[in-house]
Image 1: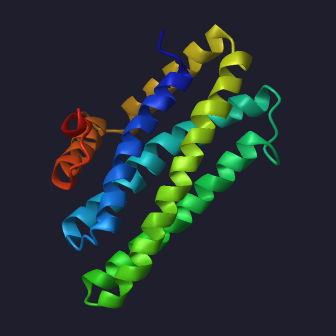
Image 2: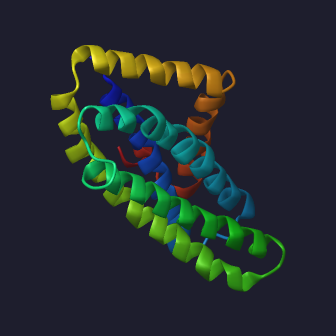
Length: 187
C-alpha cells in the first residue's frame, strides 16, 4: 500500500541518487558548468522546491497537529536541517556564478558547499526514513495517510506542469550515466 510516508521515501531515493552524482563530481573535480548548474537546479526545484515543500507545508504541520513540537524534537530538527541545506545550496549557487564569470578560486568553496550538502542530506534522509517516518506510520491513521497522499498529488498537479517531475528524474538519470553512478551500472 502506498502511504504518504512511502511517497516521501520514494522522493528520497532520487535525492540520494543525485547526491551520489554530486559526490562523484566533487571527487573528480568536475568543472562541467552545465552539469554543476543542473545539480543546483535539481536541488532547488526537486529536493527543496518539491520534496521539502511537501514536508513543510503538509506533512510536518499534520505531525505538529498530532502532538509533535515545532520547537524541539524530530520535526524541529528536520526543519533546521532544511534551512542548513538551503544555506549550502546558496553557497553552491553563489560560487557557481562566480566560477561562471571567471573566478576559478570559487571552485573550492563550491565543492565545500556540495560536500556539506551531501553529508547533511545523507544523514537527514536516514533520520527521516528510519525514525520520523516510522513514528508517523504509528501515529497517523490510515485515513490521515490517504488524505496526506491526496494532498501531495494535488500539490504536484497544481505546482508542476505536465511532465516536469518526470523531467527531474530523467535529468538525474542522465547525470548518473555520465558520472557512472546509475544503479543499473552496478547491477
